[in-house]
Image (tube, rainbow, N blue to C red; front, side, top):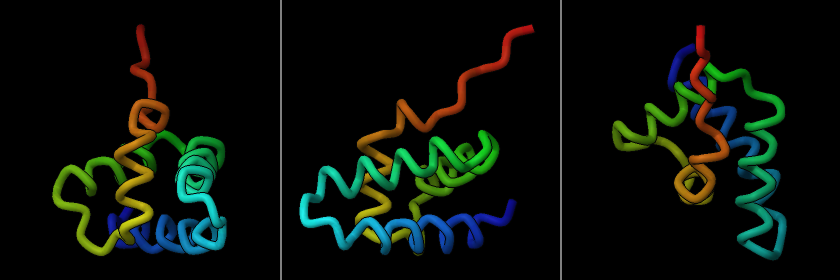
Length: 79
């Protein structure tokens, strides 16, 4: 999936959670949404984009991705 589409969607989700007065709750909400509703390749894509500098990601999204990275990283498939 195109990184810019992922950035746009992540920022839109972040904008929704930005209304939350508690920043930690907002970041957990954003990360939880990505975990529940984004398929593994989308999560891998946004994390790879973050690793590449995270251009275009909102500050809330960057912080949430960094803080909750372990939860968001898809588990390796074993054969």
